[in-house]
Image 1 (spheres, helix red, strand yellow):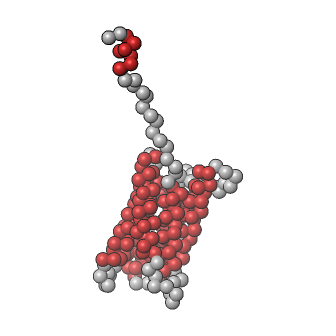
Image 2: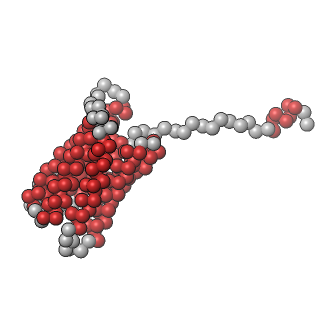
Image 3: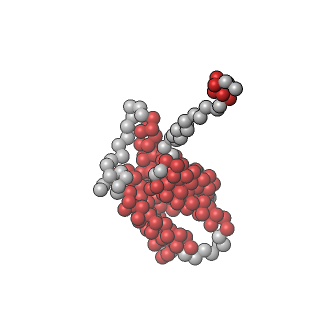
Length: 203
């Protein structure tokens, strides 16, 4: 066999292809969180009394706030963003869990929801502290969410409709802040003329 023939049958070794980059999943996770939070908070704020069954959020708790946010969390792991990955995956699991709990829980649930909200308030506390290193917009999402969860779990433990209603109002504010932060992320990803500031890290 000649040298030229040997070259023809020897397969060329191509360099490994670089890993394909993916778009920032943060805006999707924030939008999914915001919409579902808004729908549930409208119920807690008593805005749906007399004009809705108060269950409009359930399907979206599973599909949008749950599954889409969980997917966003998994994509954040792919990007190496441990903070966003943990936040989106955890709250995606929260919405899926809430959907399942509401569907299977008996009529008399006692303080179950209060315990669920307290547990997530504990988780949210250290996420709030760590959010000070991200940017102001993300910090405000966790700050308003922390207040929402505190008022809601106390309202559930004390059977106080008033405190739960305040929690509903705070939840609406949380949703609006999350929507803004989502929009800012999309604007940044587009790279166009519209730029929405998110502020600097607090520390």
